[in-house]
Length: 239
Image (tube, rainbow, N blue to C red; front, side, top):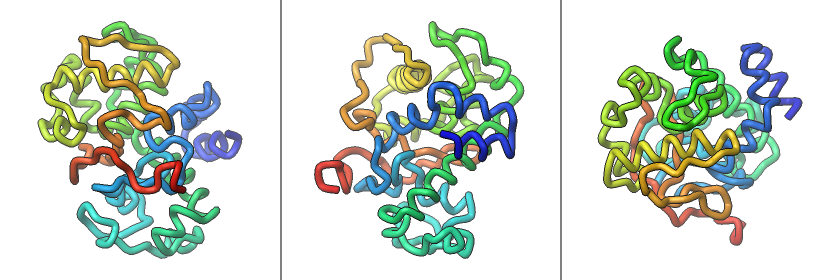
């Protein structure tokens, strides 16, 4: 975790404590790709330990292209300078592993900086029985996108403020289920549980959430490119 702390502290002293506290990124991977740098969603582009999509890689400057298929993207000079020039490099090489760690740090910093003062001001409060910490806000931003998180907070935590497309993209049939999913993630990142309103989806072996790969967004809204559900390519037993 020392590398993460140094990277974060170079941009924001406030986030250094997040990396140091209970291993935020270790907890985040449990909501995303587990321990696998190579796992890739079969029906989308979410990839690796933190399930970052090709579109988010593009926003970070490491790829260029658009759409919901990796064949539409090429790697930029910024990625090649880090030793990654292909999808296989990103998934299987040591340079690719290092770049995934670097990218999630950059995404985390961007998400924190994109949160409204109202959203950041929730730290230390309790919402629907869930303690709000920096870690829980960052996890929600990784899942929803920082802009959508701000909308949810500004609405008084009304899930109907979120795009309807989030339901299908995460295998959900109602906003009540989406609300449960958000709060369960936020509680889990703090090492706690949330009983919710009866939605029974639970974290599965290997870290993936049962109904979705939870592909992260970047910018004002989390982009919903394609519904991403199991099975996944490169599951641990076949890596």
